[in-house]
Image (cartoon, rainbow, N blue to C red; front, side, top):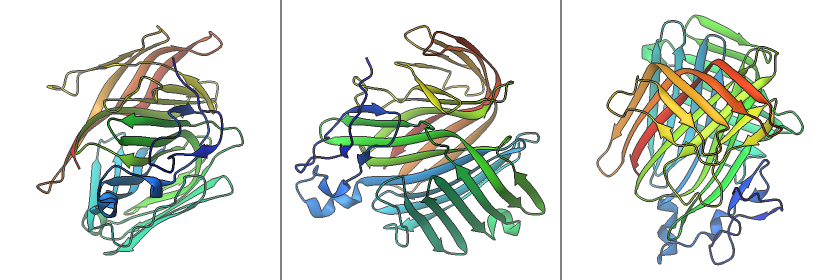
Length: 344
């Protein structure tokens, strides 16, 4: 049973408890993190609050991603890109003590997310239903450089996956994931310039706020692409932490419409990530096989801060039963699936 939140309101009550638990197809809760109350010394709580804006763009040629994150005691800025044909992958990141210079908005429906320093500028602006991404990293890949100017549009009525779940006893996870945002603009990677057109390039957002346990684990799978008839098809599957008895973040998104799923376990071999992954839900609506073609492994070890992610890029094949009972075939949909371990 998936509890849907239908009324606008605050994320947290005055005493710091979650005012609502569940999911919604639109962002309707105000992220009032100033009410957080999980440490006896409230002045230290900012060190444990996590906030990030992660953008991804699927083009016919490549995957591109840019992130601005504030983990409380440190900020994290990173950009990476991968060529689907050659498998060439390059990633660079910055760790910013205490997140100095990072700006993140209160909610994901408007505002500016930004960082500028150390020769790197990232700015994400949300206004009037559009998301504008600016990236300039001149030293990226030994001076090859990467620049991007990308406009992501969110048509009226385009639905998203918005989730609020507790992480007992007093922690919580508040997240918005938006798939299949038509993309225009360009990505300049060294001498290679790729123009983006909304009928062939799609963006996605992972917007997270909350307080996690120090040691955390999760799985996430996502894709944004097109069906043969031109409709957009998105996939968002996640599990691994928190109390998901009220709702999960599992959904298939067709032409901007959420088709909500319940439980979707991950079946994969953590000793060989390149073997096929299988996704079958508890209602017999989803049956997908994910066949990887690239393992992006990112590892950070700074003592008390540790992160290791295996983000597999590959193709999804199978089917899903939509809310109206129709069976939708999915063929060679490029996306990713990941395993993430963190001490943060």
